[in-house]
Image 1 (cartoon, one colour):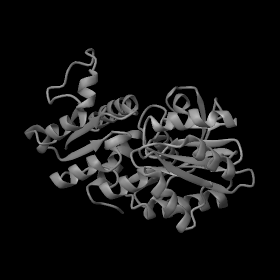
Image 2: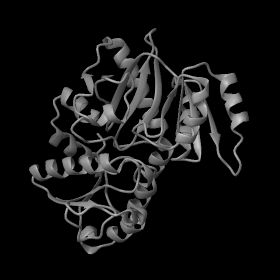
Image 3: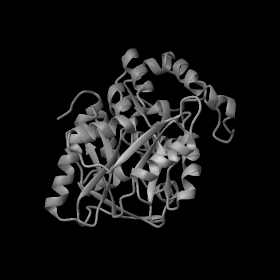
Length: 331
């Protein structure tokens, strides 16, 4: 099968995407596929890896992707495997283009990606449908922004510590755990660097868990024990910075409850194919769901491959399953 792997992109998660894309392409080649690996900000010829990508190429990357997807060499592909993370690669824009052009591809549709990437919409859906989630507020910067009024609203609703994060980012990019009142403004500014919308969330102490969905089933619950106390960017993507327990030692009944809630959330968000739900487990063993990732990482430290391995799927087999589902076999 001829498979085009898309990686890189223009988002803040570009470096992670490059790592995911290379891992995926190597595994697909081992599976015997004809693989074309593309950094989506570069022309079809693709520069040598030793030549750095310029800022201008990244700025024009989304337009370049449009040109790539209509190239005859790409149009002849049997399947597009997107390893793009964040930004237009995961918010439904790229998926919409792929759908319009008639490609078969991995993961959720444009609708599912757009809903899941929007943390405000996701939270509303969770609350309306009984998916437990931390207490939250959101704010949008439109024109002038009154910091004093915003900080006062936050202080009246939340106790410290609290979490402030962008409304449409992943990989904990732009996220701050605020422990002192005087840190709130800086945390807001950090989040606003990435989006005009930011969320304020109740901080949930407890265990860090994640659940991958593959087709119609939830894979084993994974517990993450990061060195920093929070599963931040460094702990996610640096080998040795986190310990992983698969399956999580939480008992069969609680694991099944979390898996069932994850599948429910996955469907409510209109997701399909595969994804990964992040959550916290409180000291009273009550789960608190945070967000769904529609294109989870596929790096050497990524969580979906770890969960798949626990049910006997190698990385190569996991990719074949994702492709099979993406081509319309959802059983």
